[in-house]
Length: 88
Image (spheres, rainbow, N blue to C red):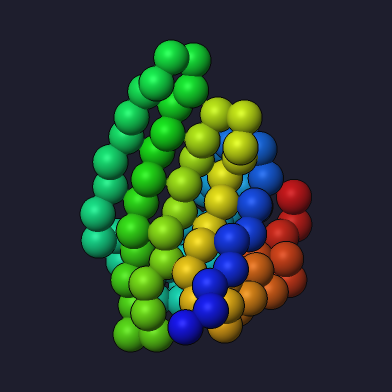
C-alpha cells in the first residue's frame, strides 16, 4: 500500500498541532501509542493514531517539522479537511 508523508508545518507551531488534533478526532482517530526522544539538540515526539479507516503516524521533530504519514488516501483526507477548516 503506497504511503505519503505530509509536513503540516514547523514543529513549534502549536496552533497547527492543535488544529491537526481536532481534525483527527473529527475523523474518528484515537491515540494508539506515543513516545518521545531527545538526541543532542533534536527533540522527537511520535504518535500513532488509529481509526476504522487505518493507521497514521504523527511526528514532531526539531528542524524537520510536524508531519503526518500513512496510506495516501488517509493522508489526503486529513490534509483536505485540515486545509478546508483551517481558519488560522
